[in-house]
Each structure stands twice: as structure tokens, then as C-alpha cells.
Amino acid sequence: MKCALFVLASLWYCVTAHAEGLGKPIRPSQALKAAKPVALTNNDGKSVGCIGVDKAAIEPDKLVMRFKCDLPTSDHKNNQYWFLKATKAENENDTTYFTIVNWKSGKCLGVNGGSSDPGVTLKQFVCDGKANQKWRWSNIKRGNRTALSIQNYDRLCIAVDRSAVHRGQGDHLVQERCNAAPDQDWRPIPFRS
Image (cartoon, rainbow, N blue to C red; front, side, top):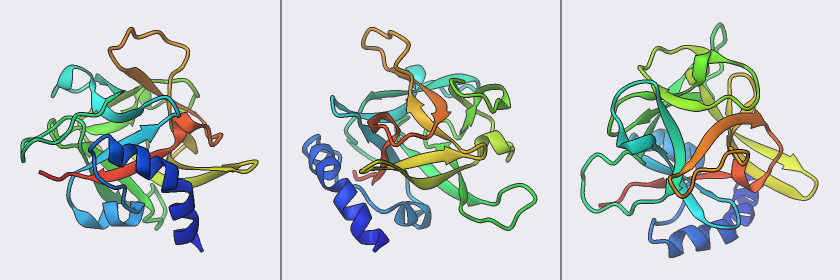
């Protein structure tokens, strides 16, 4: 049943993302098992975007944003591709968590300052295994809508910051209360050269 829900919820998204030339989304469990980089894509109803590091930086403490997706051109390390590496929650045997490691920089996606407050920006940091760098896939339901969200240890979801104006240079990503909004609906698409 979960597979059928994933397929139905992904149908419109899959067609749009595939039309952008990125390829087809895969199941989150496949992304975790693949040990290959994936693009984390979002279709907010206006455009398809991918999570990437601002200015393709490799240094820590740089903003992670939603950009127009770059098409893969070769086996080069692209800053919009990430490895999902299984990890455990602190003091638990829960293995549904993973770290999101940037292919180009080798840094982990995390919440700025380790904050548990909604609206806090996401950045890349040196991977340290702390809670602010732990994520998991979660089907969030609201009314008749279901979003495949990336939820952190504090049960907040990766979302596009709609309060800021960025003039075409990418949308800031923040952690927000999970609400199944289109800007919290993400799909992994495997790298293909």
C-alpha cells in the first residue's frame, strides 16, 4: 500500500521532473541503499528545484538553497548531488535516520546553530554526527494532500523560505513545522552521467 501511495503522490511530480531531464525519482529506501549520489528535488507547483550549496562552496557554514536543477553532464562532483548515509538517532536504535552529505564538499546538511526553532536556515557543516545533521523521510498528511518530506531530529521539515526575496539566486531553505505544503515535498533522483 505504501508503494502505491508513493506512486500516486509522485505521478505528477515524476512527469514534471522527468521533463526537466533529471530522470525519474526513486523510493527513499532505494536512495539509502544505493550508495550513489542523488539530487533532492522539489516541485512547488511553479518550478522544479534541487538542493544545492550557495555558490557551490566547499567551505563549512555556507547556506544550502533550492536552485534550478543542473543537469548532470559527467561523473564530476556536482554540488546539487548528495549521499544519504544511514545513521542512528541519539540514544536510540532507530536506524531510519540518515545524514545528507554533499558530493562536492563532503560536508553535511544541518540546521544552523543546532536550533530547534522553526524558520532557522540550513547550511553545510563538517559532519559531526550531532542531532542537527540527522534526517529521515516522512509522509506528512494534511487533508487530502500527502507530502514526502525530509524531517529532522526535532520533527521539523526542510522547506523553502517564502519570506525572503532572492532575485533569482536561489531560495533559502529553512526548517519549518511539517504541513504537507508543496515546498516541503522532496524526491530523490539518482545521478546519471
